[in-house]
Amino acid sequence: VDIAKRLERARKAAEEIQASLEAKSEPEVAREAARELEARNTPKGVCMGVCIHWSGIRGFGILRSTPHGEVFCHSRSLANCTELVVGDVVTFELGFDAKKQKPEALNCCKAGVGGHRGLDHHRPET
Image (cartoon, rainbow, N blue to C red):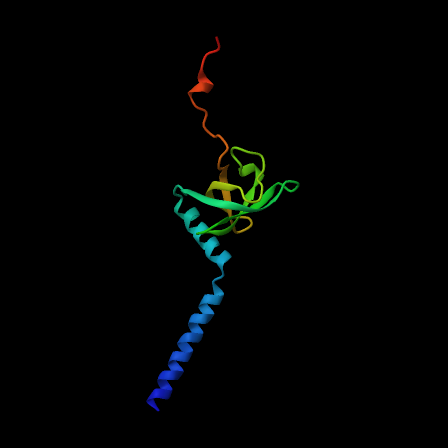
């Protein structure tokens, strides 16, 4: 009888764990992380990601970042280019769109595109 009670408690605990895992999907976890960052009002740090979808006509795309999952990116957030191509590596700050209740990329920079101009740019003409 004691073993049967233990097995029943273990089964219930396993069901509760499974239910809690199913309740928190990856996008929800990313939204919670973005909300926490927004609430703290601290610098958000720089994240890295890869463009997995871009619509030049609509002016937005989706980035994939390992710790944050899929993140929306609007063309107005691009700092050193006007659009992305699937496979482009980017750095960005993680923001949160309060209207859509989703994380979004801010100050997105495409890797390999010169963002800094060296001293040659400032040479006086002769």
